[in-house]
Image (cartoon, rainbow, N blue to C red; front, side, top):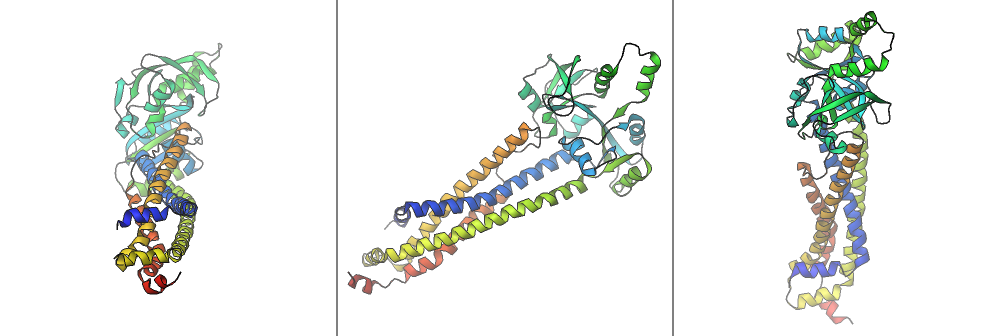
Length: 403
């Protein structure tokens, strides 16, 4: 007797009941798997973009806003900070590296960031083609920016005012594409980088008037600002004193990415726990439904089981027949649940990409997913245990004597 093929036929002899049990078990496993995959991808995206950044310095406001705007570029910065203050910070004995960021314009919704080549070097991003800017009004596009806009080296574009699409166009200020970054899976994929002087020039031209004299232009030069500064400490001990120094002694604010992201993830964790709880409830309901279906099937097939015993099948094989039905169900639900979880994560990643947010992919195996087949196997065994024991203990003689 082929237990696997016979159990498969028995399973689909009740198509509606099997489909319902499969749906419940799939939804429960998909919920669990989605939480594991999405959480891993989000943590990985945060870790990748935060690497090597010890502090973000900007205008006073919300520290969380400062991190989201300065590191992940998914929020609006609280304001600008004077260039003179940034230069003093650069000379601070506890600062090993300072990367200035100047924001204010966008290209088709992708942010144009005025900075230095150190920003790209910090993430280890190489150029796929072209070269870095050598003068103002030249730009290097991230891989996603180049793919979406279709711009190539030598072409020109104009920025729009604001950090989101739909702002007024700076029609007189043309940027020339000097290079395109190779894909890195980090925040630079969705940015257009240029020299800080480019951002100043665009906004100087926007506010310039015909009656401006040299004294007015000198005043503008003396009042230069940048939006944010990314800081890397010289020693780990600076983490205890540097933010306090900035917050108490300067008109600026320092935010610790590690602290703020931990706080953010703790808030998001409430939602993940709710989703995990929902998955656990669905799994419990699915397990109960499978148990009821198998228990009823054993009672209906008592004569079939007695005939199998008469044909020489040992009790262990008869019990295994019921167990295999449950395991077939678990195998199908596990495959469908994992596929649904990865597909849902990929859909979420696509939506985030369209909003120029975190880079998340759904088609990547996560080590924690190894718990999903084990969970499915456990639910299947527990649900089938009592029905399998009942089939194992079937008394052949009374059943054969009944009509």
